[in-house]
Amino acid sequence: MKFYITTPLYYINAEPHIGHSYTNIAADCLARYMRQLYGEESVYLLTGTDEHGQKIKKAAQQAGKDPKEFADTVVEQFKHLWKVLDISYNDFIRTTEQRHINTVKRVLEILYRKGDIYLAKYEGWYCTPCETFWPSSQVSKEQCPDCQRPVERVKEKNYFFRLSKYQDWLINHIHTHPCFIRPSVRSREILSFLQQPLTDLCISRPRERLSWGIELPFDSSYVTYVWFDALINYISAVGTFDSQDRYHSRWWPADLHLVGKDILRQHAIYWPIMLYALGIEPPKTIFAHGWWLMGKDKMSKSRGNIISPYTIVERFGVDVYRYFLLKDVPFGQDGHFSEEAVIKRFNSDLANDLGNLVHRTLSMIEKYLEGKPPKERECRDREETEIERKIENLPSQIRNSLSAENDFNFAFALEQIWELVNMANKFIEETKPWILLKEKKTEKLERFLFLLLKAIKKIAESLQAFMPQTARVILEHLEKEEIKKGKALFPRIR
Image (cartoon, rainbow, N blue to C red; front, top):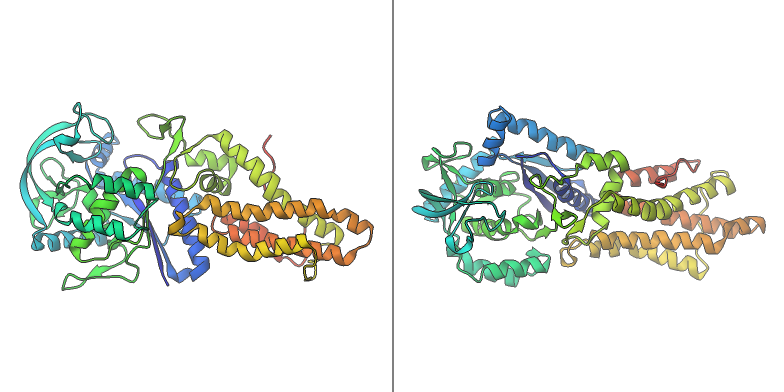
């Protein structure tokens, strides 16, 4: 069994923000969960940076640096953020690395020899911020269909990849593989787009107009279009081509490409067609998640509404930030980000529910049993049996929630965990252990405390993928020979 999961390559023209961290936290959560199921050596999480193109060259010039020097600086910012957010990636690939450059050139050579890349004159609209060509049929009021900024008229020779040749194959593949594009609304969106004939993809830029890119191996006067270049990272990181142009990898096909919904078309149209033309199996699932909004707007540098992940982590902690992003909206939908919403989640779910349960239980063991772990006891009462059944069923409930068929529903998986948290809190209120102590019902008190500890251990084990640091702290408390209440995990924010 293996599980290969990827994030997009993040474009380095700006510092990382909440949107970047959302994708990587989701990917990290799934990678950690799969490692619990299949073992450390069976899971591979890839992330990295996209470093070519006009926007990078322009940003470098504005910073007074050459493009590679500029890239080296920004890449360290991404790596530092992933360390702060406890992202357990196996590999960090950069499009300026030689292993990637070699693979891109090999792909270009294979497709050129096959006749799937050809030289032609192009006349149409070009969006510099998006680095994208647009046919006149998709441009209105001389504005880019994606970013709404002005486009310019361009007339030049370029190399094109025959997307149109494989359109029928892609449509059939989407129809016959229901988990290929998730959530299903995104699959319908791509199929709707494919109702119109695909135009072939321009995959080059003249060197005289853009020098910062990977040179075409069959024409040194051109460099590779950044989107054609970047997508290839998913195979350049984990495999190689042999002398017969066959691709070999332990990890391919990818089990999951996680992307934002704004780059779905590149991943769900360009990429699978590129792979098919190379004779390589497509990824099993491409999942496009939603955006985090400030008010009604997507966070973006141009709008000036970006919140730094560091600000949230410094105030609330890493695990609180991870919990909020994964719990507050179903994965795939847009969410509204605010510090007020984080505080509400903190006080309700983490302080009142989880933190209170752990603190009360450890306090009772310290007080009633002098810190000695209670002996194992069999359940007898109906309430005890219900909690025992929930403990036993929780792993399968989480597993179902985190499947492609159920859209990797982190929020629902956490709801299942919190159902056990709430059952345990209710168990304390209804059992009234202080009365059991007063009436000297020692056996029932020990049975009660043993079941609570068992529930908390299962909760902590289940949270290892979502809130790794919190889970570690709880489990360390439970593994000690003498149990003490310690500090509150989540002191309420007033």
